[in-house]
Length: 255
Image 1 (cartoon, rainbow, N blue to C red):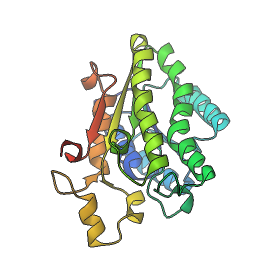
Image 2: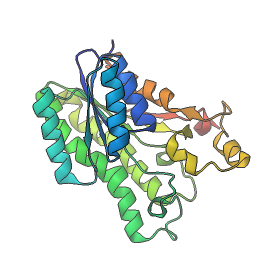
Image 3: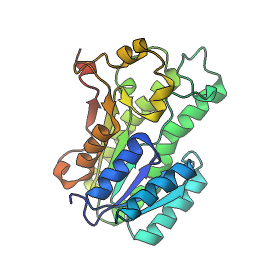
Image 4: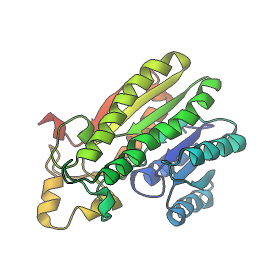
């Protein structure tokens, strides 16, 4: 029960890595607050956890809507009293929606570029802006940012996504500097190819599967593997770690 008695807020918690983290954190004793813009899926995950005897609530939220974020985090504080863990997981990457295409700066309309950054970068900042004062008042906490290897290695054809994830990596470092002495640890996971519902839009053939498995372990990662890393950063087992940028990519960046 590594998170016993803690309150954890997870964005993008309705599916993929966020849902896996919600399950894992709840298993370890946390009261889990699930935030996502997908109401049906988010409610389903929260119901699954409560039926298993865990404490979990869901709030539908578009994290790019700052006033809505402020209202939601205030409601969470009113219900739970504090927030100990924040997993900034929500993000847009591979998608069948043309607005979120992974492509070059030349082929990304400015409105699409702005929307990707509003979700991936501004959204994380919005939630953190309202959670940080609660953590500081409570004596500290752990913030985990979910970025990407795109944020630390140049990869072609995903420019808006890369900008957003690179920004999240940079924010991890500066938040660690700014708030370490106030008891808040800030760390970052940089996943490589992880098998999630979002990635299904990008894997259409055996060649695609081979491309996304091109790492030292020869396979894609799982949402549960990322959730276990997030759990470590959330728990007191990582109490001497802050400002860490951790690739979770099957060794891809070591090649």
